Length: 63
Image (tube, rainbow, N blue to C red; front, side, top):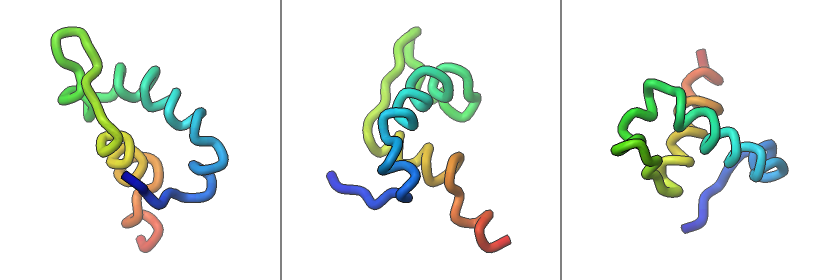
């Protein structure tokens, strides 16, 4: 699948992926659905949702 992301993410993709996997998925109450039986279960759509909803929320740009 191909996604359009902000230049900041494209230029530092590995850092955003690592932060998503090592910090957000493990600690955020919003990621509880991705923690199953002590394992992390996610896909690229979960990462894009994380970016859109928590890192670069569109609605905050227009508030």
